[in-house]
Structure formats: structure tokens, C-alpha cells
Figure 1 (cartoon, rainbow, N blue to C red):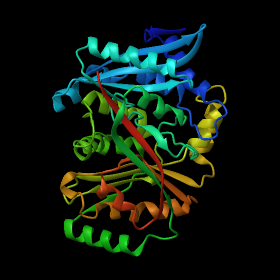
Figure 2 (figure 1 turned 180 degrees about the horizontal axis):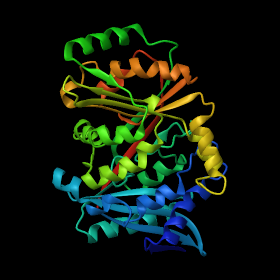
Figure 3 (figure 1 turned 90 degrees about the vertical axis):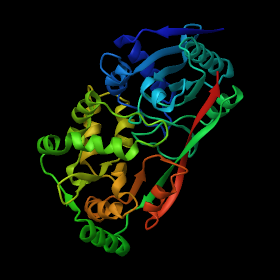
Length: 375
């Protein structure tokens, strides 16, 4: 018999909720664990500024006292108000290969969502787009990344058996880093700079970039992504939170800003050395020795770079600004010995974004999906 328990968001419960996934995938060569501390902070209403406009619930499934599954229910009121929907989300979902377990978990989330007045459930999604989203449906034998979900191949079939249908797909690409900037990129970048008066900005000081462009960077993300699937606009409190959370971790050589002739930020490209192997070795723990693996991942030899984010102001989209970003970044990739670059998930229908990789030797190596069901 399966027992479903609703968890209070105490530190002890959040640690157990996070540890379940890490234990479930122990020994899997493709799974990349999250930092336990980061997931606890994300799932803590007191720490996560998204709690200002989100409700959440956490469920864990047990058999004979042993944890066999977990799931979070989330209602993002900001997105619902924008879309005029009554939609709840499920996320942070993991379970053993047992249809009774997955059925009881989803039944619990569906009941919670209905009691909150919702009539549809979608996921896997987090609180906002800066959380992990999308269930893997292709690419199970590819090494995951720190920014994406990995799941066993049986997950999608469990949801489909419960009546969940495809809502939307994301695709991901693995690119070979060229030895030099493709000539077409150079040509387009030079034209864009001349025509629009655009300028590439680089920094050596994290403190200075926070002060001069920290807020502008996240406001640009809001503008660039505002019309994307289920996008949740970042609030000022969230922006402050993410400035402190992320900007201190960045390799500034791999951060490119583009401004117009008035100094307004209109484009940003953020890359990071792949942390996948380092996170696997750390097993999600910073202490006592996890920090050593993470430091080696940031500073040590690495042949792969993650393209965490590319954002261009709507006024300049499809005008060649991406070429300007990669004209700057590719020499740094080459100098650091990166042979491969990983894209972040991109909507399968977003052909304009896909075309930015057309001058690379590229392989679409993963696909992930959000599912939906009327409840």
C-alpha cells in the first residue's frame, strides 16, 4: 500500500525531499545532481522570493516506511492572471518504476489543485523559468547539465497512462566549437555594430557589473522572454535575489554584454564551464569535500561549455545581435580549450532561435516535454 504524506517545508523535510532524487539516481552515469542547498532554498517559502506570487505543496510517497516518490504542486498566480487561466503546475517529480506510486502522487497534486480552484495541471515546471523544467523524452544516454532535468525513460509513459498529453516540447543542441569565428558571424557582427551603433562590453570586476548592469540584465531577460511559454516576469525582489545568487559565480570572460549608443543594455550572452562532472562527484553536497570538485569544475580543465542564456531586446531581435555575442565569445571558448558547447532548452517551435546555431556543426541531442491534463 502506498502512503502519501504532505510535507511541511521544514529544513529537515526539504533535505529529505531533495535527497530522494539523488538517492534514486545513485550510480546513473548521465544524471547530474542539484546542489542540495540550492534546492532547499528554492523550495523554502521563506527564502524563495517567488513565494510572493506562488503557492506550493510538497508530497512524498512511502511504501512500508520507505520513500518511493516525490512531487511538488505549484500555482503561479502571476502567470495565471496574465493568461486568464486556472492552471496549476507539478514539478520536482521523481518516482520508482511503479504505476501505483506515480498514480497516487499525481492524484494528490490534482486533488490539491482542484481544491485551490484550478482546472488544469501542467508540468514539469518550477516556480519560474529560472527553475528546471521539462521532462526528458529523448537523450537518456546523454550527460545532463546543471540547468536541466534528467529522468529515467519510464517517466513519460507513466504520465501518459494517467491521461497526460503533450503540451509543449523543448529541444537542446550540442555544438562543436569552431577553431575560429565563422566568417559569416564576423561579417554580420561588423554590419550590426556599424548600422546600430552597438558595442560589446566586458568586465573584470563582479562588483562593478552588479552595480552598473545587474538590474538591467534581469530586466532585459524579462523583456526578451516575456512572450515565451508560461514565462513568469521577475519581480524586483527576485532580481535582487538572483543578482546575489548568480553573478558572483560567473566567469567574466564568458559573459558578454551588448549596449546601444546610449549605453542601454540590449543583448547578453552568459556561458559557464560545464559543471556536470563536478556535480556528480560532489553528490550535491558542498561540504565536507564537495566544494573541491566544484572549484575544479570552475577552474580546472574542461572540454565543454554550457550556453546558459542568450537574451536580446525585442527591438533588436533577428537583426544579427547574436553574431555579435558569438564573435566575442568563441575566442574565449577556444582559449579555454572548450571543444563542445551545450545549448539550454529551446522551444521546438522557436525556429528563429534555432537558426543561431546554423554556422556550427550541430547535433540535436535531447528533447524534453511539458504535459497537461484537465482536472
